[in-house]
Amino acid sequence: MTGAASLRFSKMHGAGNDFVVLDLRGGLPAPTPALARALGDRHTGVGFDQLLTIEDPAQAGAVARYRIWNADGSAAQQCGNGARCVAAWLQRDGVASESMFVLEAPPGPVAVQSLGEGRYALALGVPRFEPADLPFRAEAAQDSYRFTLGGQDVVFGIASMGNPHAVVEVPDVDAADVAGLGPALQARAEFPEGVNVGFAQVLAPDRIRLRVFERGAGETLACGSGACAAVAVLARRGRIGRHVFVELPGGTLEITWPGDQSPVTMAGPTAFVFEGDFLLEQVE
Ligand SMILES: N[C@H](CCC[C@H](N)C(=O)O)C(=O)O
Image (cartoon, rainbow, N blue to C red):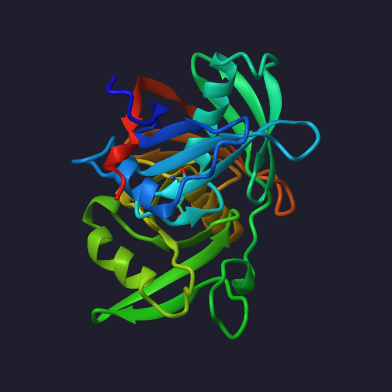
């Protein structure tokens, strides 16, 4: 090591949604958007969909706090796959010795249960559907909304898991114009803080396929909060049940939403990929 200032990091993924995890406990400063972009660059940095920081908790009962930055440097309010990786990191670090513990996240507390073999179940809060919760500019709350994008009529539902989601039901996710409609929806002025756009195909009452064009990262191999939002929108419409397997390109997540006022629980895998030291001289 040249002695240059560096940042120790862990590279992890949850169903292919990949992360850099930074341990900032002890009061290390939060990353700037420029540092997040430098770390996230897949050519000149480490590369990630999101950066997750582990910090000292402020809430009583929480073992740690986490925050989220997208690859474009923007801050996000929730990251389901990332939260599972934070839980795995904390268990490996010995901080979370019990199989059940609580994390502090931007929208509120997240209850964690270790399922063994790197799998974790998290309660990610009660989904909200009021336009103001996203925010989404609309006259009134509706079951679905309609935009004409590039000559196409696009019908979608909305849900907040702390972060904003639009969910488009499609007959075949493989044929969905994710790269076209994702950015087109995100660019609408009605989503002043942007939006994650999910494209969902119903296979059975307990099984859907899903692709997500994420805010600040583009299409990812999996999106945990997006899986929760897709189940919430489709279950509320009666299109599926309340215990659903969500098949994403990077893996399958198990989502349970027992009732409209219940939290959504998401269960899925985590993986450690490598550890490293990021040299800060890279950051402009
Ligand atoms: N792009 C999202 C954050 C990451 C969400 C996703 N990776 C997950 O697992 O929930 C946003 O800007 O709200």
